[in-house]
Length: 184
Image 1 (cartoon, rainbow, N blue to C red):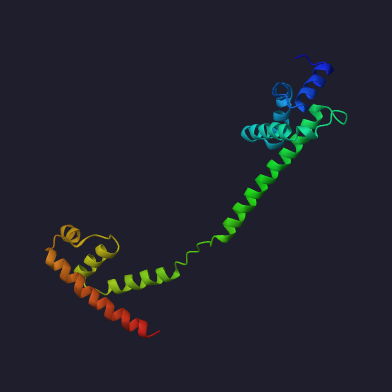
Image 2 (cartoon, helix red, strand yellow; image 1 turned 90 degrees about the vertical axis):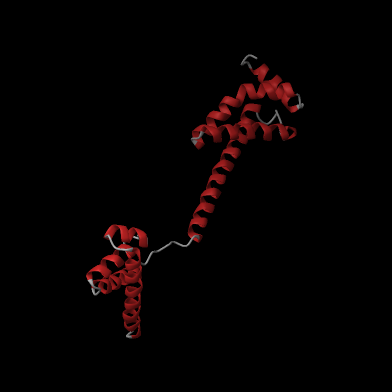
């Protein structure tokens, strides 16, 4: 179709009459304008394509409201475009507000490591009080997280000796730590 006013009038009349060829002609003529307006405002090609589709679907569904004596079809489509762009911006705002509300509802995990630090220092002090071999066995068990077999291999001790050192050391540590807890 040519760009003269008669063609625009013919497109508008066909569109208003519900002729699908009129919808196709209107889309061919004004979809680039609608897309450009949406893209400039939204800055996202996907959203601009969604707006373009919504504009023409909304226009087609409400074509009975179009009055060619009040405005040209292109101007009427631009008006619908502005509303659809505003709706897209509002949808973005709703999503952002929902995300912010969700983030605000989530408790912020504040890690208070002071109790853990006190326990580690107390344990280190108590381990230092042990004899050298039991102390080495317990440090490998606590700090290196080795199994009894790995400790035995690492220190060159029989497995039974490692288990005995761990058992006796735990009893001593428990006794000492229980006394310290009672002081508080």
